[in-house]
Length: 368
Image (cartoon, rainbow, N blue to C red):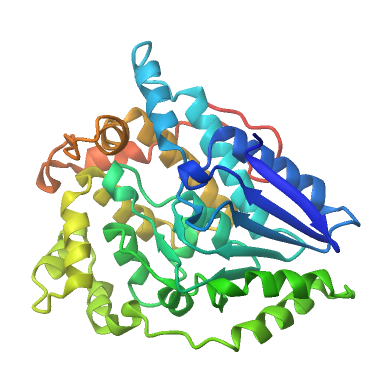
């Protein structure tokens, strides 16, 4: 069974991530297939716009297949734990090439961000020109819970959010619904989940003129008018989130979070995931977002490839995946175990440059 399904209807190239049992999680073969299709359709006269969706009704994409990355790390450690496993490097580098391609694609890309959209799924969605969410959309970047950090361009898009929302979401993995995504700029259109067929019907009878982006925008704007966007929990907590604008250190962030006098379900969920997450991840996420504010999009993906490679030779990423997906004991043994045990030298070791030449817009990828 193909991991990627494609068809063309009236110059609309439809791409379906086809791994419903894994909630359409991204494996390296799926990424390679997607990369090839995007390149093939980029200059094709047969394609006016693209539509990306996930198989089934549960998810666009639940993220990367981190179980495979865990296995590659464990195998490499038995040989040489100072080297980045080639399978991991290939996965991250090709995934980021796909994400960059979507961000810079010359044709409109519609992404049906319905159901679960996490990690790598957000990477596919966020760079598209026309991003759709529904009443059943559930988005998050929960990498802190597995010893990783928000990647797939998150250094870019989290820093584009208003106030301190990007920092808060990166450090707490807070869950977002469709209304939150509209408020935070992660989505362009909020529609009913039952309207996908209507969107397809409109696209299939469209006469494509010279301005394909405008054509798609008009179709989606008209359909989205039929639905009112609900109240956003993220918006309702704006006063709370604005407090983190003054956090100059991770310790200050934690103090504001823990000592907040207002504790409701949304805030408590953020506290819980922050405290349960990897202390090393918390530190590198804070530095990642503070240091990456002025990076270009290409520099973002270069820096994230290096940071992801470092996570593969530091202990917490493999340990977090073990606890969540392999042994499923939900009890990761973080190293170091607490925020206070982590030194600046340890944090800096994650940011030491270990990859060789890598360009997101080139076919050749050279590892360390």
